[in-house]
Image (tube, rainbow, N blue to C red; front, side, top):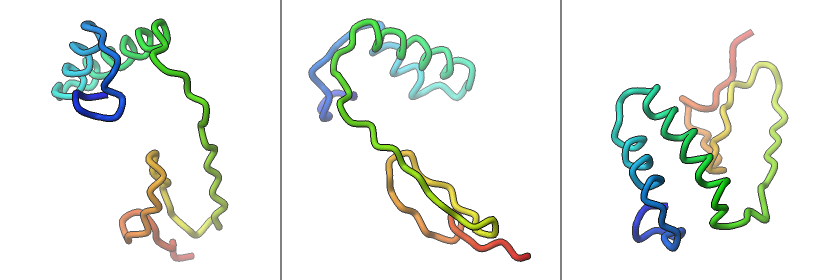
Length: 86
């Protein structure tokens, strides 16, 4: 929702300030509070309606260590996908 990006048609001054605070703060509590308030503002104004929210399901064996990515990239590099020794 940054300027010049795909969803750059909705503006809310408080949301913008919170977005910048969350982006640049190193303090986790400041970021968490900013994201909570941003979510409340977003739900109050509802600038767009989400019509599709894919459900991702991964079946793995117990010896496989894999963490799916929230952006749906399938990352199989060694730090994210490996076999645990039994």
